[in-house]
Length: 400
Image (spheres, rainbow, N blue to C red):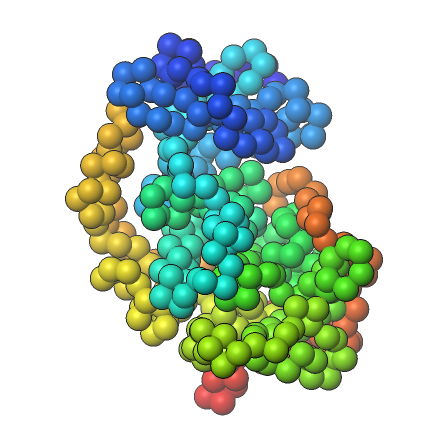
C-alpha cells in the first residue's frame, strides 16, 4: 500500500504537528497506539500507527483503511472516539485520535467486580447504547462491541476500534463470520450453514453480554470447568441467562453454570428484576424481537438511571458547557451542532453479501465448540430470523 492521495490525509507531516512520545498506549492487529502532544495547542492525543506491511500481509486493502476512516469521521458523538487528523508516510498511516486517559472498560469491570451498583450500570449502559445508536443511525454495524473497545475519558465512555465495523446497505445481510466469539450473537455463530446472515441486532446482543458482565463480573455461556474456559455455543443459542441467586442448572439442558454460587440476600438484591429483564431483552436469541437501540434507550429502567435528562432519542440534545469546551479545544475539531433528529432504527436487512472482512478473530481465552448443536426447530426458525425465546419482550409481543 503505497503513498496515496486520499482526501482524508493531511498534507502536513506527523512530526510537524505532533510530538510523539515513547509512551505506548496499546497494540492492535495492524499496529501500535502512541501518546502524543499537539505542538500548537499542547492537547494530548493518541496516535494510532497502522503498519502498511502488516495490513497487506493480512489481506486488507487501502480502500478498507479509507472505509474505516470514513466511518469514524461520519460519527460525531459524545460517546464515539473522535478522529482528529490523518497522516501518511511510506511505511505507515497515522490516525490522530481523541485521547482517553481513563483506561478501558474491561479493566474497570475487573477492578470494581461486585462493587458495581445498579445506578452505575444504568449510566454506563446508557452511554454504550447511545454510541451504538449513533452508529446505527449512520447505517454502520460495529460488529465488535466488547468492554475492551470502550475507553474512559474522565467519566465518559467512548467507543473505539472501527476495524470490523461495516456500512450496511438497504437489502443487505452480512455474512462474514467475524468478531469476538464470547460476544457474537446466535445468528453469527450459526454461519455459514445454519444462518442467512445478520445485521444491526448483533451489536445489541453484544451490549447485553457486556451488561451481564457488569452484573455478574464474568460473561455468560462460559464453562470454566477444566483447564481452559470454554464457550458453550449450544447454551448461547438459547440465550438463557443465569443470574446470582438463580438455580444453577439451566432448565431442560442439564448445563451447570460454572460460576454459580450461594449468594447472600444482599448479593441477590444488588440488581433489580427490572435490570435483569432489560439484560434479557438484549440477550435475546431472536434478532427480530431483540431490543433495538430505540427501544432500549426508551426503557423505563434505563431512563431511571440516566445521569442527566436526555432528549429520549438516545442522544443528548446538547453537550454540557464543560464538555463542549473540551470537545472543541482541538483546532481540527469542527464545532458541530449535536442536535440529533429522532433515531430511526434500521430494519433487519435481508439481501446481498457485503465486502470481505477479516475472518473470525478467535478469543484467546476461550475454546469454542467445533459445531453448534441445537434442535432442528431452532435451525429452521433462526433461518427465518424468527426464534421463540424466553425474552420478556418476545413474550409480551406474543401475548399481544
